[in-house]
Length: 81
Image (cartoon, rainbow, N blue to C red; front, side, top):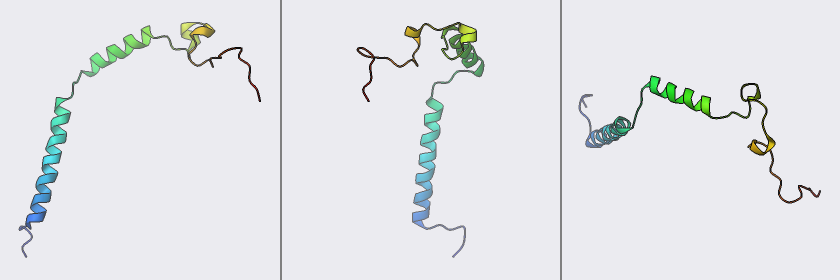
């Protein structure tokens, strides 16, 4: 059998693989994109406006009620072991 001839199953499988690849490329093409410079600006703006509780040297001491990492107690705050 010549190597350049393919059985119908192989040809069908190749077609399906190519169609799937085209579908994925089309999805990637249709995604909303922004430039790296725009993404950088947005990231800098976010970092400048959102208080990071883990960096008190930049943002100052944290009020306990504003700390999202502080365990919240319900009721009297007692635990029974």
